[in-house]
Image (cartoon, rainbow, N blue to C red; front, side, top):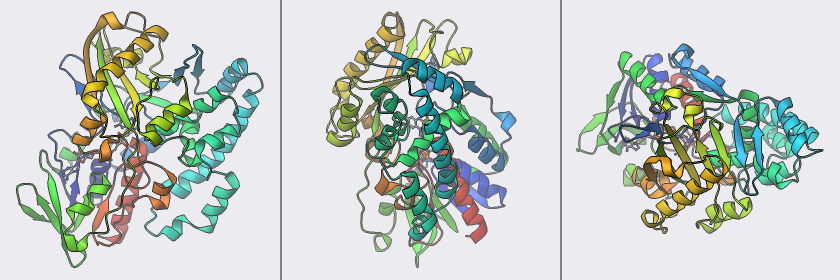
Length: 483
Ligand SMILES: Cc1cc2nc3c(=O)[nH]c(=O)nc-3n(C[C@H](O)[C@H](O)[C@H](O)COP(=O)(O)OP(=O)(O)OC[C@H]3O[C@@H](n4cnc5c(N)ncnc54)[C@H](O)[C@@H]3O)c2cc1C
């Protein structure tokens, strides 16, 4: 079959490879000159660092799907991060997260007497949630809502209380604020508030201990170079700087795509890897559904910093927590305003990869969760917010940072929106209950034959391994169905 993939994000590229493996004739169209979408580098020529994803989770899922796509695990050099990360609280307390569950229990018991046992109970319960949740929710497509709302699923959700929001769920184990934050902040990895994502997403915090956090030598975005090389070897045609503007539909069946220059090209199957809310407008008016208002995930203020100094003593990943986490979350997700003292994630790759920056220098990445809000004058406020966080991290963990800065580049939700991310949110549509599982847009278009979607804004959701899991589900469906 002739298949067109619209978008060369990780979801599009992996689907393309999985379909080509099954003998389909695949062409990818990418509107940008570069491939990879969010999985790319930021560079000024001298310094280079991941622009988006930095934390490699679920390595077995990643390697297994890459293997199915014809990329052997030997092509990737994954290095474990242990400790997983340090957390610096506003009060000055620093806590370390370790991969090993027993070691983590000891660390918790040492700092919060009486809570070590509770942590062990939490991981035991989360193991069940992960095991059931991965099979029941991440390994199935829910184009029929009743399959999502099956008796078995509802029974599990009710029994495990994973219908609660993550904050309430974690509170059952940790009534101590700092511990609660340690095991609920992970919902921010996918742009959701712990106060509104379902507790099922707590499986991310569990997965950090169970499967580890890893670093891909050369940076996460180097995965795209590996995938591109295999795509080219396998004869997949890739058109870069080529935007698809419209889907061609006849009798509720996709028949091809129209490009920005007006060319029309016929295909049996079209897979959209852009942000799902934009797909409707690419259909002829007669095929459009009533426009639905999706909620975007949180946005990010991102700073990439070249530094004429090395900081070996820190962990690769670290979180600087705000003075008031619940207020910060309320500002980002409910009030959609800036927080005076927000949280800040810092990535320092030279601690694990000495070649990540020029000799004796470093390159850092700061991520500050902010609202996806167009009304904020990002160009006016972004530098001031970033400088304040740089000063904070200098005090708590990076002495001498400010004087050694040689390069600073900042991306705001305005840049994200201009690059095509829905509402300026970084992680696709928000992973709230009403936009999760069977309620999220699905891989299979509800009314047009041969039209599919893959990527962070469709089921099973955002994050590299999860988007790849979506690509796997989609390719299996198309291969089985035949179109
Ligand atoms: C700041 C940030 C930090 C992150 N951190 C992590 C992390 O640590 N770990 C992790 O696992 N995940 C992380 N993520 C999430 C991860 O990056 C995404 O879930 C994933 O990359 C999304 O892939 P995708 O397949 O949806 O494609 P995208 O990356 O969205 O790419 C889609 C592609 O389609 C193209 N396109 C769109 N419309 C058209 C069109 N009409 N015609 C042609 N081309 C089109 C776009 O140009 C783009 O290249 C992070 C994301 C961000 C932004």
